[in-house]
Amino acid sequence: MGFWKSILFRKDGPRGLRLRLSDSEDKTLWDRGLSLPLLRFLLILLLAILLLALFQSLFGGSLVLEKRKTRQLAHQVQELTRQASRLHTLERQVEESALLLLRMENMLGQDHVLPDSLLSEEARETFTREGVPDSPLASEGQQIIRSMPSAWPLRGWITREFEGIKGQGFHPGIDIAAEEGSPIRAAGDGVVLIAGWNSEYGNFVLIEHGIGISTLYGHGSRLAVSKDDRVRRGDVVAFVGSTGSSTAPHLHYEVRRHGLPENPKKYLLD
Image 1 (cartoon, rainbow, N blue to C red):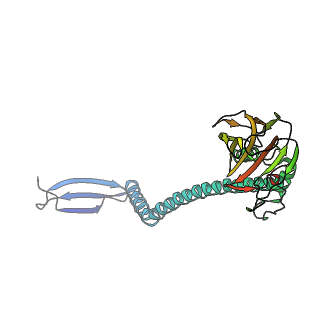
Image 2 (cartoon, rainbow, N blue to C red):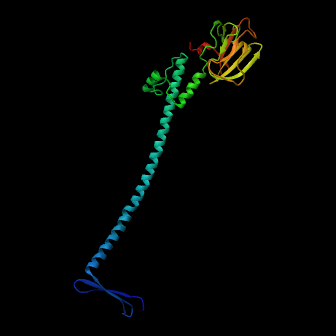
Image 3 (cartoon, rainbow, N blue to C red):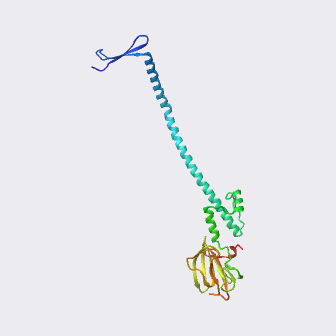
């Protein structure tokens, strides 16, 4: 049987068509009548396929682009949300740092005014009412405040004031006279760097408080701490004596910032 060579449509009565396939020798290969309902169905199916293909070609690419844009926008929204969260955290840290600075300035008796951009009115009211807010940064700030040498190391009579300018009257601390054996206490939290003796200070203790500040307690009769001990404000570190370059029982007390002497009264709160 050869391949079909011709297709013939002819009317098959009033209700249909007839389809006949024949080869080159006019031998019938396939002959089938098609009713009108079937023809309508096939025509509708063909039109539907054509319309679907046309819709796909016109709008399919646009839908893919829209989905891609939607995914890109969602990614951008997520990134902006993360950035906003980081900015909010940074804003809180800056505000808490400003609150801490304000509190430390108040402690030191300074009247610096922070820029309004660093501290909102609400934050200022919170500081006035509650102090530095409770947070990891604020906790660190509280530790810095505890480390400040703001407490008197000894109660007694000041027999010599601070004279920070080198020269004939140079005196890098204050002298506090008290009864021999009176306890000398740490002015703030810190670590003992030196607990020993030299010809000038006699028995002395040097405490590092962090943030570039150290304190020295000289002329003790004996010491109560050792090198590398951690001390808290109010802990006894030595006892009043007259060792070293001294003529009477007293405490020679120094505060140094980055190695340079400063007036201890600048840090004392009461």
